[in-house]
Length: 245
Image (tube, helix red, strand yellow):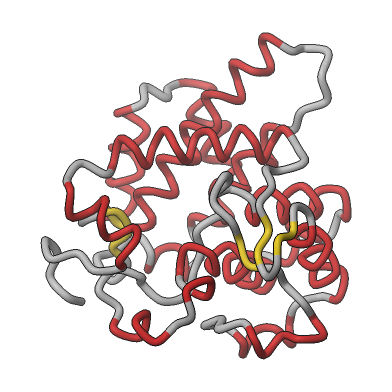
């Protein structure tokens, strides 16, 4: 798995022309996340994301484009406090959901706003804080990372996270919630309350790192979704063109 995934990583870096010092810097940023066993699994066909593009491929593409946009932003705004590492980390964590969403029969039973598109940013934060706790030790970094993950789908909504009424959420990783630090749970509550309308939140990220990552995600997703079936699957969760895994 590791060698094949490394070939895929290098293929993506070559597609976007990331070479020299930029290539080394980028790999150094993503390596602690990329090398994790859970991320390596998401590089395989067990996790198909847009059509037959794997989740890992999509995430790395997002991270590379985030890096490139961030470099341009820094050149144009040298006087602005911007952390390129944080932007790339948000990209690497934003879609670390639990259950593949295409052709998942369980999705038919979910309430509308508990479906994958509205739920997965919260699942991603929970997974990320459990698998990579070192990234959330600095409170300022944690705020930016969590806010960026939660609102990466803007202008699409995300579920509001309520610690007092948590059982109304149909999350697939409830078993990990007890391992999530209280400060992370409080940040989840606060960021999902911004732009609150009923049980959903509609808001862009408060931080430029998150906004740039969200921009990169849209660029990559448009590039990856090449047929009608993949586009329709974003709404229905069903894609006839891929083999059920």
